[in-house]
Length: 204
Image (cartoon, rainbow, N blue to C red; front, side):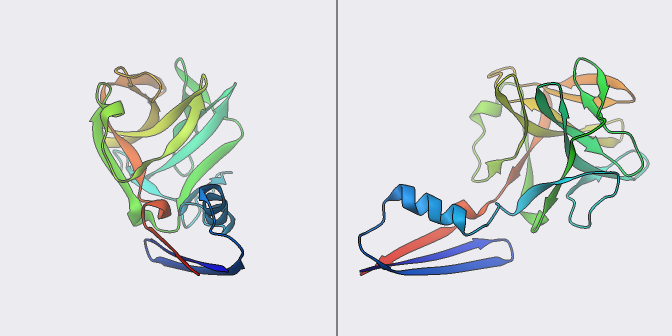
């Protein structure tokens, strides 16, 4: 008989699990499934957004008027895109200009917001980025992942899409004053998740 002990740390959360009376030493697929079944969702998650900012929403910065800017994502046609969310303001998508997000809008929330980290990079070096954290996937476009980008523009924070699939030319698109703007340098959002701090032990 085998026993599995899993000890995991993510921010302020300490997870401890024990499974006993297993007839054979578990293999990797079982371990992955076990970790998924314990119900931990990497500490960050997307909530439906209908105009009210949740208490656990992740604040990405402030605009030129010192009003909070949050990270959102919205569906448009066949893609999902990172967007700016601000209380009382229209949500718009950077897609061949500026498109209104009428429905299917989400806002990024977290149990441990201190585990987020913005990493400076640019269009030429995104694919070479070395970090112990996981890059946050903010959506998808044309079958490729879209990352969450942040840029300081005209004294305010703007959130936009980073085209991860364009290796060597992974520019960021964002909307400012109703216009789509492209930048080559930006910050990309990462998160220090549970899978970088798992201690899995077996005993017979």
